[in-house]
Length: 156
Image (cartoon, rainbow, N blue to C red; front, side):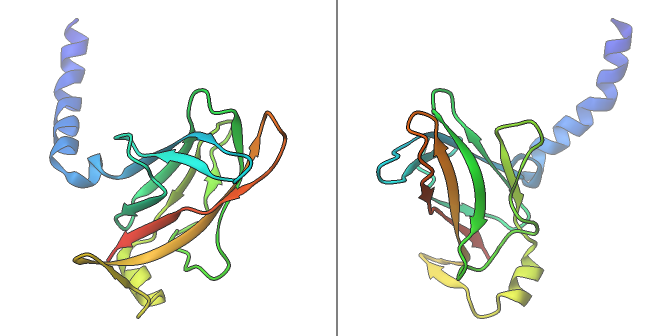
C-alpha cells in the first residue's frame, strides 16, 4: 500500500495539470459512427456529447478519432479529402493497427495560415479553414460500399 501512495505523489501532479490545461483535455475529438444508410450513403456521426457531427469544429493540432459504435453493422474502408478541398491534416487519416479506429491530426495554425492564405471562411463570429472529406464505408449486411462526405472546420 505504501508503494501505491509513493507512486501517487508522482502521478497526481500530472493528472492535476492535465485537468487545468485545456490542451490536455481537448486534444482529442472522438466521432462515433452509430450507423449508416446504404441506399443514400449517409453515415450517422455523433460527437462525445451525442450531437450530430456531420460538421465538426476543431482547433489546430487536435487529434480526430473516428470509431464504429456498437451495433453499427459497417466498416470504414477509406478516409480521405475531396480533390478540391484543402487538406487540414498534418498527415493523411489512417486506421490504427488492428483496430476499428481511424485517426488524423489537424495541422498547426501557422502552417495552415501559410499554406491556405486567403481561403478562410467566416461562420458566425469566427474564421475557419474548411476540409470536406470522404468516408468510404462498407455495409456488412448488403456488401455495398457507399461514400459519405462530412466537413471539418478548423478555427483560425
